[in-house]
Length: 394
Image (cartoon, rainbow, N blue to C red; front, side, top):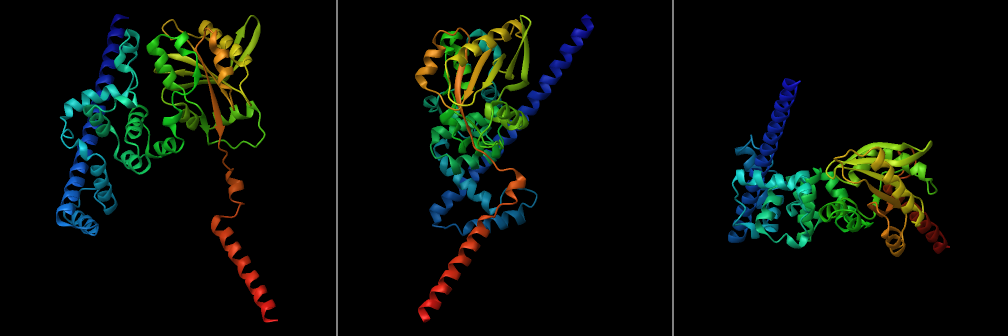
């Protein structure tokens, strides 16, 4: 048995080392590429400024670079313009945008994930960095060089406030967002929703865990992937969220693992069913989600308190953190929510949700396109003009 344990430790150690190597290789390659792009953008910008060259030099550069560096990709006319924009946006970092790769590798790992060990020991270094503290040049450097190029382009185009842009960079790193996911989160104004849920965490959780739990939730949640009719039941919404589980998990945020829908709990010879049950991998706790149609009412908090107690007693492992409850409803009165949670002893959050309904594919195909509507309108206008001309001739 001891040999088996030692072998498993060896296997785990090798897997961890390989993953660290992959991470460092990706970080190194990304940092080198971004530094190169920043330098190229700087060279073109400064030469344009010095020589008075306009934008016409860019197409010529793109052609010549393609001919003379045929093995190198990424220097199209469009991307050269992106490099200039990248330099212009972050030209103030010119003195510190040349880090050693080793330093970047070490520092970036602290951005990529929250350490449970540090959470248990009470280290403040794991708390999400507030936007107000993003003035530190070294931290900006880490964020910039750890963010994917495609995401940088989206951020420059769609987020003008620099502090908000840094916030999204950190979310990209923490959550591994693709370009499309980032664009969707910016469109839904995630930075205004994160950590806005009404909670009692400060009274029911230790300070550090309370901060992390609050950042885990948002208000409102936006479900733009359902095909519900105007009138729907809570069960129908639940089924839709499970149907589009991958998108639902993206909206919930990083760390959520799906455990089950209508999860059965047997208590004193009676069956109770939790709408949606998740486990949060970073917080190391179960998360109970109850879906409610209409506005929040105080009775919901009591029922959620019951569910959280039951999960803590039946499912929670001794090493797990206390179960967290999240009540999702279509509307809430802030004062109702505060009073309802005031004397509850389990950590519970209350958030609203919004539905942005999409049309089913079969219905979409039966509807006219914008071009068809415009063409029809033009035809009708022409017909009216012709009729008016007839009457004018008479």
